[in-house]
Length: 316
Ligand code: UDP
Ligand code: MG
Image 1: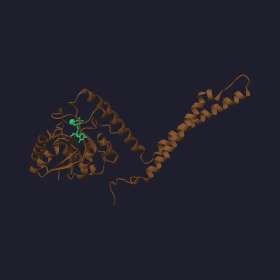
Image 2: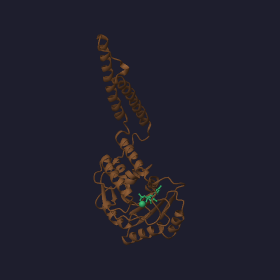
Image 3: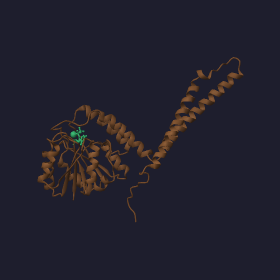
C-alpha cells in the first residue's frame, strides 16, 4: 500500500464527507493505493455515524473511536500503530489542510529520501492572536530542538516514512513536537513543504490559549528528557555542586569575619545579621535538595523498562 492517511478528529461531522471525497479524488487521479484511518477522539456530535456511513462506500476507509476525548496526540498515536502504507500522511479533519498536497509530499518521501516532511502554513488564515504566539513558539522550538530548517512544527499536515511512525510515541500533547521526537529517534532527514492553508469552514478550533503555556511546558519536558532522561544526576548533581560551593564559600566568609571580630575590640560581627549567613544556609539546603532529586531520578531511570531501548539502524 502506498499511503495511509491518518485523520484525528473531534466533533468535525460537517467537514468529513467533503474531506473524504476530496481525498478519494486525489488518490484515484494519482493511482495511489491507500487507506484512510479516521480516529474519532470521543466526538459528541454524529462524526462517528458519518464515518461509518462513508466506510460503506469505500473499503479503504477505516475508523477507530475512543470512548472519550483523549486529545490529538493519543489519536495520532493510535493511527500510527495501525498505519500500513509506505508513506503515512497526517492531516486535520477541518478542511484547513488541502489533500492536493498529498502527491508532492509522497514524492518527497519516496524520491527525495526524507524521513519526515512537515507542512509549512506560510500564509495562514488564523486570527493574529494565534499567529503571533505561534511565531514565537516555533522560534523557541527551533532553538531547543536544533531542527533549524522548520518554520511550522505544529502543522497538522505531515508525511512520514512508515518506519518513522512505528518508532515514535506521541503522548500527552506532544503532537506539537513530532519532528523533535523523530529527530531523537535518529530520523534526521526532516524536510519542509509550503502548504496551502484555509480558514476553518465548519465548527471551531479545539484548542484555546492554554495551548501556548502547555506547549512551552511540554518543550521543557522534552528537552530535559532528551538531554538528561537517563542520566538525571548529570544535571542535578551539577546544580547541587554549584550551590554547595557557593554555600561553602559563604560559610568561610562568615567564620573568617567572626574570628576577626573575636580578635578585634572595635569590630563586632553578628552572624545572624550578615547576608552571608543566610546565603550559606539557603545554598546548602538547596544544594542538598538538588542532590537528592538527582539520586531519586537515577533510581527511577534504573527501574525504567526503557533504559536500554536503542533503535538499531543496521546489524549483521
Ligand atoms: N482534535 C482531536 N482531538 C482534540 C482536539 C482536536 O482529534 O482533542 C483534532 C481536530 O478535530 C482537528 C485537529 O485535531 O482535526 C486539529 O484541531 P483544530 O483544527 O481545532 O486545531 P487548530 O487548527 O485550531 O490548530
Ligand atoms: Mg484547524
